[in-house]
Length: 331
Image (cartoon, rainbow, N blue to C red; front, top):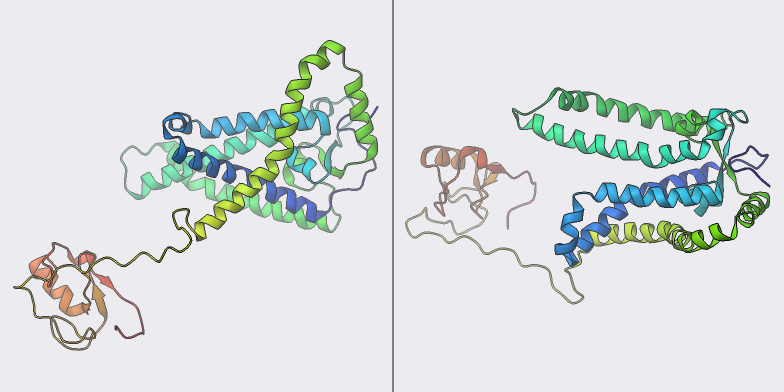
């Protein structure tokens, strides 16, 4: 019987399959987020309470599926999708060899969870520091300063490891696998026979207890990569064509122009002219509270004195002026 994670002479995984597996794994979490977002829109009363623990629910489910896949296929579920398996290069009966499955679970579930939480904390701390929040802690400053550097170094190390693996200078596909003394190899028939024999050696009672759980977990494990990949594709598709757009629907019409007050400045006959000086626009500028275009100097001077739009009289400030950078004529 083949020992799970035992070293064999199976060929190592190609760099293309490693890239494909990594791409599929990186799409799982965004697909889960999209699924939760969709479920929240459909069933807000039920999902909103669980949304706070969305990450924890995801990683618990991931732990169950990865444990099943490692136990039965000696590979993560995305690695098994590409017919890969994990082999330990540690010395037989050493700590790394005996606990290869648990070490793999930690690297597949626990470490990504910590990375997600660090990413979340970094975004929060960056926002707090940018707006000058008084509740910024020393840990916030530490994360804001060092997390981008850590992320950059890890990406460069990963890229360097890919290059070394491509030119056969290392047998480990990613740095994390090197730290855990595990290599990715192609699955062989011997491994399948060993797994089948291990299942046959289980007692009858254990078989009866584990068959339903194994069936459910096996089904989810096989379907999850394809389902999550499809959800990721749908998310990308609907970012370009929103769900609310139906076939045959026209484009959303532009908002109506603000009303012009009777006692406001006299509008010019041409849209190419400034309503204040009635000359062609020089450095065209506008305001969020106005649909009209002015010369930057005219508008700045007027708003500085009157604190409102020259046409609509809606309140505004000098810092609200938006300069239009365009070479095209204003029609």
